[in-house]
Image 1: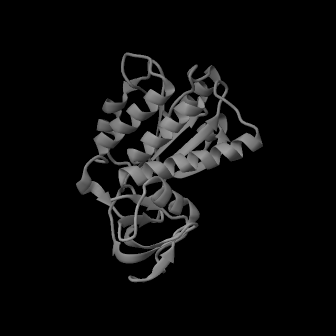
Image 2: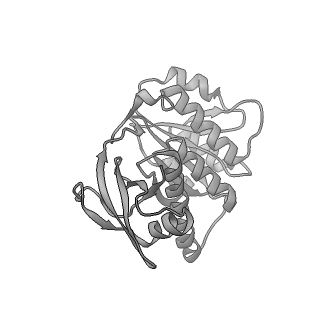
Image 3: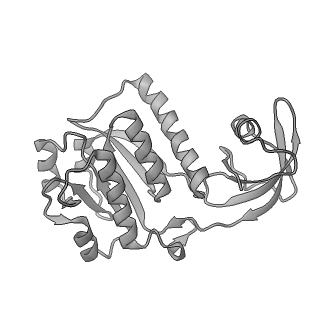
Length: 254
């Protein structure tokens, strides 16, 4: 069943109510997917639940659907996972956001680092809008009803120094003191984790020094040097597997 993200809350709509589809959804459903009157679709607003609806009217410039039923859907793990990484090449960043969303990352923290990319304000505004679209499309595809949070860009040194005693903070360093799998096997009391990936050139000496001083755990992802986007998704997948985030029985509504 085709799925579409709606920007506005659907919770106030009652079953049977007919509702005009937003322009983006109309274009995707009618112009791209070629849906017709009577076709059934799933709508979700990022709050965690979804609604089944039926197309009732299609015109030249718009369409409407009736809400058939509200579907409470557990789609999130109780473990809150944040992925932090510097700006990398545009297509690779898209890939990380897409796959991270599919794997259940709760929040993405993008960073300015010594060896990562930088954007001026105008380009950043455009990229943030684009990145949000990537995450929305990933949610529509994978069946996830909660949109990940895209946190405001920060300087890496500032982020590393920030206090957070309630989160297991893991930085991935070539030659790190332990493997991620070994670390997660020992650290089972946490309900949240932040995974920090370095830029293509790795973490700078300054950044590595702050990691050691600020209470981050240092870990590695095996004997090979991985690209930033590969390391990000490997780290997320290993973490989710270790804490049950890939087990449907562990999902909940948030």
